[in-house]
Length: 475
Ligand code: NAP
Ligand code: MG
View 1 (cartoon, rainbow, N blue to C red):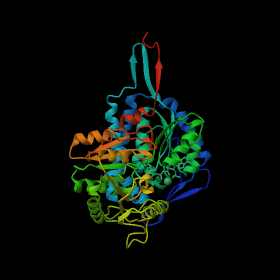
View 2 (cartoon, rainbow, N blue to C red):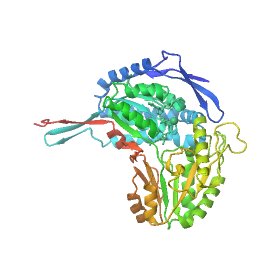
View 3 (cartoon, rainbow, N blue to C red):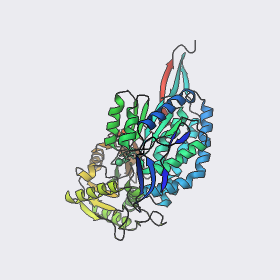
């Protein structure tokens, strides 16, 4: 078992004061792989002080200096890419082929996207004789989830480095082995002492201390809606700026003119990727009432081709769920779906045959789902698809928007113009029309209870900047 008890504070790896530790479990083997600190006030205070002290100089550095630093991080990161992919696979159980191809690569995408934006981005502009400057918001606390560990972490750290902010990261305890390597990358790349600090621990302890700390200027959080609302309340007392990237229950509208087979196939692959633990997962599939039966058959056929098992096996498409807690929660939702009267097309409760160790679950498809059912309204965050029938286009849009969430939406249509029109009516932060290429320069963020604030590319940078007006600058 790896001992990762040290935090990274003020440019050094330091032992925590207390002896409280958390074990990291490999969800495929159910065995501990690492140990981290459950940090308390001593560690949090030291990290915030270091970030506050470093802010004075770092916030004044030039754009050229920060671009150079990001380039050094990019070069160093590439040398650790495979280590990160391996660590993510062991800590969250995602297949190694997927952590190699996507998870670990996302850091490179975020770095390259922002470096490109910075070629033209200006931190000031003159409006008449008034100078408008965009300055670093200050000391940031970043609190992140486990489902795409380094992706979510880097979508905060990269723009913070670019903005001139200093930061304290508290990653999900579940995924702290990959984040440990990321901290080693920041150190090796020469990020100045105090600019980046890593403090491990439980959200209810370490995270809580950070969001309540009077010397933190901003909290940027990615995670569940429940924790997000709690954090926003804590941050209000000291008027911290807050960014919230929360849950989703995204609708995928398959229009009556769409070619059903490829549309359903792509949607099923999209949802079940990362074992359905994806905030923008197309977890509600909306199909014309007349196509419901056929869509369910196609979905079941696709699910049958998925290999569930050892994340190290090249053929595996679904590894285990991340933890026992997540397994219990998903099992519970599957049972609720059955009890609510949805048609179980494939999957169901229990572990897949032959997998008695590891938090494996059966990829599950429900059809004849009514949008008012619990399984259609709540985020399951697992490999469970809900297929919902609709009467006509207006009904489809109505159902799609009938959700407390508003993170993403998907539209499939043979007429791209029609897809555009339907997409324009969805109350969500990201719309995907006809399975487009991924765009890391596009903003990510939610409407409604999916949060507020935007990440990725230049939008993530703007989020970490304060606007200052110097009137009379040009006189
Ligand atoms: P979570 O339980 O809300 O936890 C997220 C982070 O908050 C973890 O680091 C957690 O610490 C910490 N935390 C928990 N309680 C806290 C408190 N009282 N004060 C401060 N921090 C606290 O979410 P998760 O289970 O890790 O991730 C799954 C959720 O994230 C899903 O709802 C998903 O939709 C959402 N998500 C959203 C996006 C997006 O961009 N919108 C992206 C990915 C995931 P621990 O280490 O103790 O867990
Ligand atoms: Mg959680």
